[in-house]
Length: 181
Image (cartoon, rainbow, N blue to C red):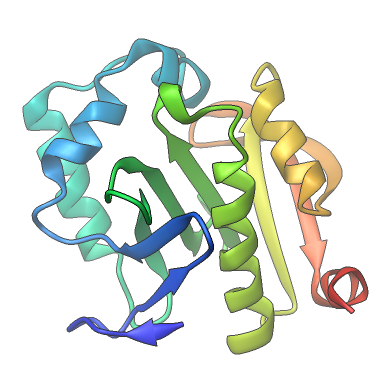
């Protein structure tokens, strides 16, 4: 982990991925995600966003950055190919910290979501010393539910977040540490 940016969010590297804080130049990359109906099907029921809506979305993501929470862009180490994003942020209508991710369709099934999210969980529990991290996903998003379970997150309930009925998952720090040791 290293800090190389003005907002002080760290950067992360795995053997396959570079995970860096989002910046104001990432609009076209976000648009690749938000303009894809197959990606958005599991986010908001398939409503794609226009370029203008994506620009507003980017501004909202930049405003949400703190010195420890926010959004990170995921790129391949070999060639800096854009993969998607991963986030640690407050869950809708709560004070709980949520992990989230969104990947380009061509990168589904490669293990990138779990790899990037695992780095965020290490950061959350080993650096920030959070006591828990939660996640939500639409019930029909079975790929994302499998990623959450692979990360050791436990299903807790169905609840409404972001205007949709979601599956709510939780990972406690002690459970994470038991898996890491």
